Image 1 (cartoon, rainbow, N blue to C red):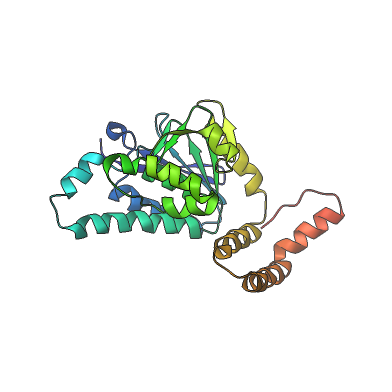
Image 2 (cartoon, rainbow, N blue to C red):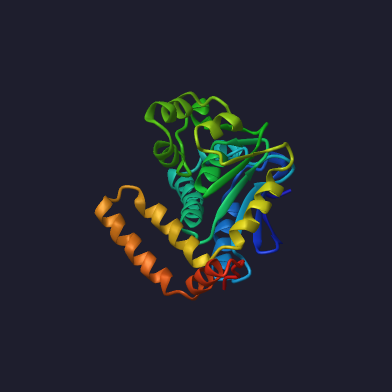
Length: 259
């Protein structure tokens, strides 16, 4: 069976499922392109208010296909560079996607699979799931933004430990470190992510988009520049139709129904 990215809708949530049974849902160029395309379509669809990325058959993602990497050693370096560029296009698409993206992790999330989960806004992980930055174990260095994400989320010493040693770390430990948001019983990560999405789907999409943009811009930004961005987004959202709906519902002690 070929590697593919399956797309399913659950209400207003789009679920993208990594499916590559022969190689434990290892990533590849087909998935990268499909991921970028799926998010592009979802961005303009009013029927999609959130996205969940998960893996088929109780496995999130084994990272890159090592056999394909071995074959790529016989090809010009530009071939592998182009493949990684495809992955990075998907990572950037997730980070800049204006709607919430949740990773629902079961089983292993290794290498680029770990990087993919870190690119999402939120992570729900099964208690028995395992994360590993396995690159150094085969004499490679990170891709998929793994070094960027870990360097910003953890003290340097902890990020160095995960990347230099390539040792496994459990979901419960990652939650203690603040990288995993919620833990689920085995087999329940996707359902818990979908339940969480229902709460996000009830909120104003324009406000959530502003929050994501502000968080992305905060990295490396001065306080003065970030304050200016916050002012612009606040004023824009105050004069959006949804602010009128939300404020009126709050004052009348009613549940808002946003556009």
